[in-house]
Structures are given as structure tokens and as C-alpha cells.
Image (cartoon, rainbow, N blue to C red; front, side):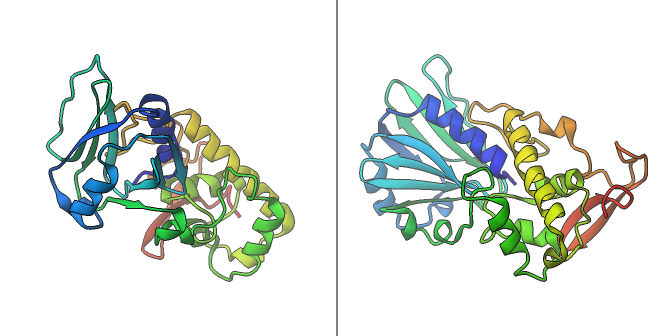
Length: 272
């Protein structure tokens, strides 16, 4: 499932490649990914100029003339741009095809149909976006605010990091990687973390996510960037999916534990 680094990568690609273009034509091959009336969706996007592309949590936001097209990629969604010099190669799971000006095509692929496309007037009109907590790479994500949020919760730290109402955009892969870098076990209670540990965790959140963005995300399954290419962060993963293999730091076996129906990966020696 695309997490913050993957969505941020796609966001930057789209902002560079489709900003300023106009949506000339829309073909909906599978209306199940459109989370509103089909006719209303087509009317809201048709003929509209893409002013900018931005991100909030794991949601992509295309600023149009007077409205916002919000795309949640969910598990297997992809947004791929085919510019003028590249003839579109439509995948079998191409659900929506946007014909843009300057002979550019934007394709929404989604193998498992969990993704969501919806047009709203403002961000607060979107049920998911209005619930999101602070952006972990943003100015509002301060150590002090993080400390206060953690100490108000008795939940284990791993599910805390996955709660989009508390921190926006972190998913299962990066939560495990962040906790490894911070040296904190995933089953520690959030409220029990010392101030020094919170500072370390805060730094790990920022550094792991920033590095993943720099490497253009993690491609373990379906994720592709806005140009249809794989990310590279999977080449430097330390614990996620490595249960039974030696820790890259100490050589101890990487462990796996299920928390809130999600798998957590950690080193029992490096993480306390």
C-alpha cells in the first residue's frame, strides 16, 4: 500500500508533469473507484485546468478550477503520466483515463479496486482528509506536540504511528523501519516513552521518511511512481519483511509480531 513517501513521490511527479494542463476528456472504465455520482464526477473534472498537485497524508490532491480532485491510492492504486512523446500503454486494470491537453494522458490503475476518486469543493468536505493529524515532515510535527500526543495514549507505539488521526501518512513498512532506527520495541506503550526516547523517535520519523522520499518510495508489490517506475527504498530496508533473517546491526534474528492485525518486524536486541 502506498504510504507517505510513495504518495509524495507521485505528487512531485504529477506536479511537474501535469500542472497547468487541462482535462479534455475522461473515460471511466470501472465506476467502482469513483466514490460519487458518475455524472457529477465527469461534470466536475471535465474541461478543468490542473492548478497544482499536492499531498495530505496518503491522499493526492489535484487543485482544479474551483474544486479539488482527491485520489486515495489505497492498496494497489497507481497514477501514471504518459507525455506527448510516449504512447499510452493501458494496463488491464486501467480504471480511469484522463485525456489532458498537450497530448498528455493520466491513467489511474487499480488492480484490487480499493482506491477512491472524489471531487469536493474544499478539504473539509472530504470525510477522510478532515480527520488527519499533523504531517510528520511538516512544521506542526514538533517534538513537544508529539510528546503530548504519545503521553495521552496507552496504546502500543506501533499502532499509534499507524493512526492517521495522530500522525498522517505513516504505514506499516515505515512504522517498523522508524522504530528500528529509534531503537524502540513496537509493543512499548506510547505513554511510557521517556522524553529522550520521544526525541529519538521524532528524529527517526523524519529521517526515515525523508530518505524514502529521496529514494522514490518502496516497490515491493504494485507501487509505481508517476512515470511508471519502481522506487528504490526496498533495497535499504532493515527489518520490514525480514523475519528470521539476521539484524543488519547486531546479527540477532529479526522477529515478527502481529499487532492490531498488522505484522510488526523488529530486533529484540537493538530495540528496547
